[in-house]
Every structure is written in C-alpha cells, then in structure tokens.
Amino acid sequence: MTKIVSLALIGVVITAACSSLNPRNDRPAVIVRANEHSRIMVQQAIANMLHGARVEIANSALTETSELAIHRTLLSGRDLGGVDNFQLVSNRGNCYLIHLNTQAREALSSIECAELSSD
Image (tube, rainbow, N blue to C red; front, side, top):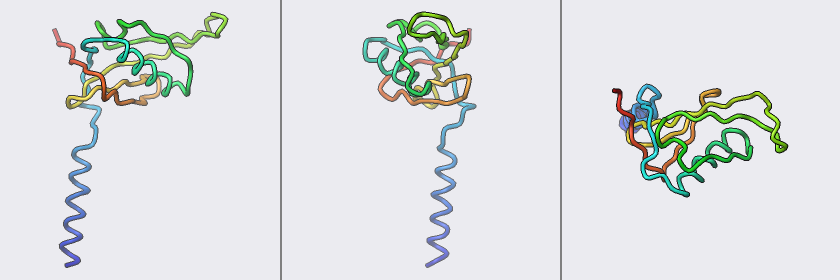
C-alpha cells in the first residue's frame, strides 16, 4: 500500500513539473480588442511589479507591439532617467506581462492576446 501511495505521489510531482510554466514557450503577443478593462489590468500588473508605483498607459498600449517602456518620473514631471521595460507574451494560450528588467511576470487572465506573427 505504501509503495502505491509513493508511486502516485511521484506521478503527481512529475505531472506538476511538466505542466509548469516554461519561459521557452513565451511568444511575443499583442492585446486583442483593447478596452478600458484591458488598460486597467495592464496598469495594475505594471504597478504590482513596480511595487505600487502609479502608472498611466494609453488605451492602445500593447496593441501593435509586444513591448512597452515606462519612464520613471517624479510627480512634478522631472525625468529620473530610469526606464522599465515590459513585454506581453502568450504562453500556452495564456497572456503574461514580463518586467524585462527583473524577469518578474504577471498573468493577465482576463485579457485576450494573440501571438505576433514572425514575418
């Protein structure tokens, strides 16, 4: 009985490891049918990865290109010189926003994205 339980647990661990997110499956993507909701979700993901920083992006962000650069400024508008780079990717049918500076990623489960063609 113990051997059967042990084998079952090994099978669960192997299955979980195989189905985990593999960055090699990341494909550059764009947002499909961008709207206010998608803009707010992307802004929230960016704010989370920037430790709560207030972020404003255009409604058209990530609709034509998979990359987005956020320039750090003070509330007074002074440029701090820092740039945070992000990329939208599709991985096994799910959308993720990656902070390229840190490789942190946020799932964007309520946003539909499409892989960019490799023309």
